[in-house]
Amino acid sequence: MLISFFCEILSKIKFVFMKHPDPCNHLSDYKLRHGTDGYKSLQNMFTPLNDGRIKIKLPETPPRCTHCSVPHHHKLYICLICRTLSCSSHLLSHARSNQGHDLAIDVERSELYCSSCVDQVYDPDFDNLLVSKLGSLSVAVVASDGVGSCGVRSSKKRRLLADSQFLVDRREKWSYPLGLRGLNNLGSTCFMNAVLQALVHAPPLRNFWLSGQHNRDLCPRRSMGMLCLPCDLDVIFSAMFSGDRTPYSPAHLLYSWWQHSTNLATYEQQDSHEFFISLLDCIHENEGKSKCLYKADHEECQCITHRAFSGLLRSDVTCTTCGSTSTTYDPFIDISLTLESAKGTKSRNSGEPSVNSPMMPTLSGCLDLFTRSEKLGPDQKLNCRSCGDKRESSKQMSIRRLPPLLCLHVKRFEHSLTRKASRKIDSYLQYPFRLNMSPYLSSSIIGKRFGNRMFAFDGEGEHDGSEFEIFAVVTHSGMLASGHYVTYLRLKGLWYRCDDAWINEVEEEVVRGCECYMLFYAQERVVQKAHKELSYQVISMADAFPFVDC
Image (cartoon, rainbow, N blue to C red; front, side, top):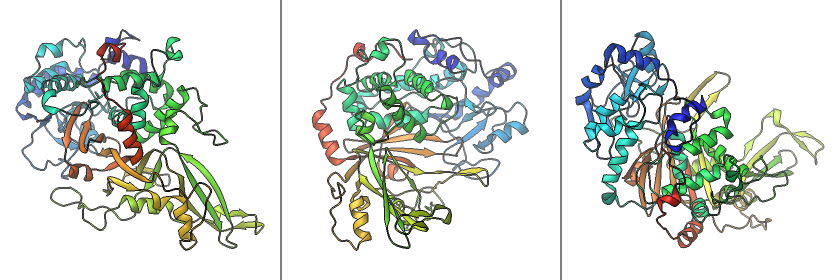
């Protein structure tokens, strides 16, 4: 399954594995019975937007799901047979209750979707119709992509081809910072693209790869014909900073990651946070370190993963009887935060968050909750050495050492083992663009515990480097099983929305109003140092691409 999928993606790399993936039978059946009549009947509803996308313009505003009558601002699908509007929750039930109604079109993104296969599908005839709406790419270009079978689960070729031409035509008008480039969706890979955009613009990682500290031409793993994910990242960094604005396809990286994380190698949407952790682990392993992220003796690892993201947490477990404390230290590469119990509210008319609502959770509140002392349950009694018996205790977390890059993960997905159900928390979160982490350091937390007295802690009294600036926000919109990831990047004081192949500048208010999932901060001194060290150069195409990705 992995090999056949990548055969289609990597057909232009002379890296052929096997035959093309099997076509979607539901689309094949639809084409036999209806041809392209369904596409043409919706032709007048396709509306090109200023950023190069095409969406379906519906008469009702806001559009509502036919089944639940709830307004939806993200995922709605229109049936190709009966034009019924379905949200993500009711799309499959509509197909099951109406035979032959498997195919629908994503209203917001104008992409064919098979509800029975639970995946995007590709049809050149559908692409021809949409590309003609842009008026910037001839039908012949799409027809020459080398894919003749209808319904191949693919990398959304129509969109990347159309957007490629659109981006090239408008490159001079954009004047976007070097390194800002769209990433093609290779079939439900927005989770990967969102994280890659953040990592490509993370100052230490960007300087590491652009300065040739992992050179793919000198890598021993690659010279032996082995897969090397850091080499694939080297190619991506070169491509992103080459000056080319056409969307890039990170197919080799996806394949390398699949080989490393075989349990996640599927057509289905994955979790961006899981991908982030897995990718850093893979970078660490490929640089010749031990397979575990941290050594038992906490010896400092010098790979780029840990130099950039590694910090140290302090855990104090205190006996409630005698007051003695047991302290342990654990390394971390990100911090997962629980949303406060107070839920964010939304405007009834617009569906946007009430930004000034006192009920909206805040990042500072989440960090306070993370470092707050909590009483442990009776099944977690401490074996107190002073008392010589098991006692009830309390636990408090704090940060002993901050990393240069701070990744804060907001827990939006809840999984209940008792109810055997999962849900997404849609609360909005207020977060600052400049973050002071000194209140959450061990020196501050322990100082408060002893009445704000000044104590000399071993390496824990330093507040230098506690000021952070935000540089990337990964967001999740939609439902738990069928959502979409988008990254917002802050470059030179401006915000840019990276939605797969599409890049556009947005206002600050748009970023503040999104459902943040991962927040990436960099120490102020790291940002300043990175700007001084990095001299941007346009990399030649021959140097950037030893092979051609599709």
